[in-house]
Image (tube, rainbow over all chains, first blue to last red; front, side, top):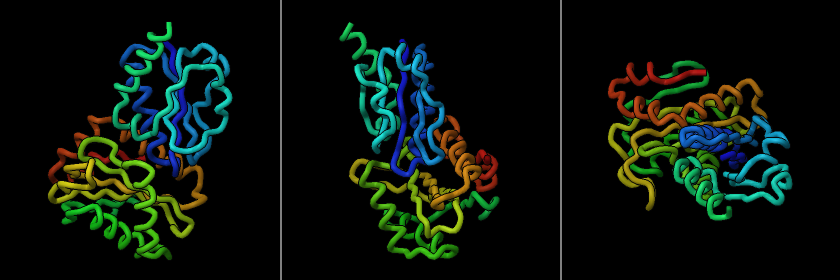
Length: 105
Length: 145
């Protein structure tokens, strides 16, 4: 499965980067291709390409603040959570993403 | 104990509640920065309202950004005894890592802090910190960027 997403928290220095790492690690461990863009205090990093978004089966938005470029995901299946969820339960979140994709097949 | 300009370690801290932790942070910040104790505590509480700052079992990561901070810092509080009740949902905290981010900090320092926070996603690394019972061992485990 192909997953893309965004991590963004309020100050943009702590949960943004931990959420990205945890989601990418959990996704890869479960055998998925996953790319998480961060919108933090440094700005946008690991920016998603149009191709990555187009090919993604699902989008995970782990965000506590308004993000830039949300319209890039119009028409895609989206799971929206807080960064806290992504940091606390990354494996469960990936399982949920798989479940959502499988349900809608 | 200061190990370089970015990291400071406080080992065997006798702090028993979230409020005592917040007061201790305010005390440290107030030593070197023109920011009031009330403002630090207010910002810490405001951040907690957005969502819990727990990052793993036994580990909290409170953090603030302020233009009244003159330099950014990362503080480690290794608690002498676990805080049994941080709040109604958060129990048994042994390690508090605090990020103090100066407003308009340089990109270089922000990148160093971001690398550090990414390292906190590794549960095995946090376990090593939690299981370091001697100060020197704890300091040696900290990954510095």
